[in-house]
Image 1 (spheres, helix red, strand yellow):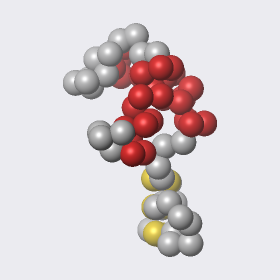
Image 2 (cartoon, helix red, strand yellow; image 1 turned 90 degrees about the vertical axis):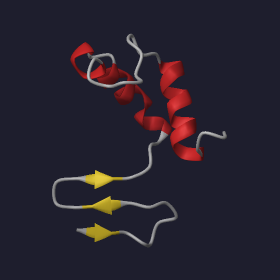
Image 3 (tube, helix red, strand yellow; image 1 turned 60 degrees about the horizontal axis):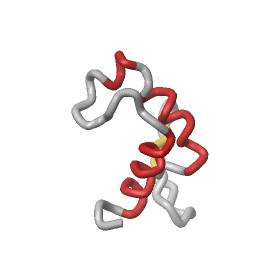
Amino acid sequence: MHLDTTRLEPRLATERLVLRPFLAADLEAIVSRANDYAVSSMLARVPFPYTLAEAAIFLTIARHGAEA
């Protein structure tokens, strides 16, 4: 496991996984996955269908907290 401390944003990487903050470039992928009913039906607070506008709200909250 490697914690990258050279970036301004936190990033945790292993051989098989990278955890990093969400980016605007991730929005279409988030919408695509959330619009899979098999996925969204297992999540308590994800509406179905899931729109790009809802993903943008999620991104804002994820990056800036609920007070944003």
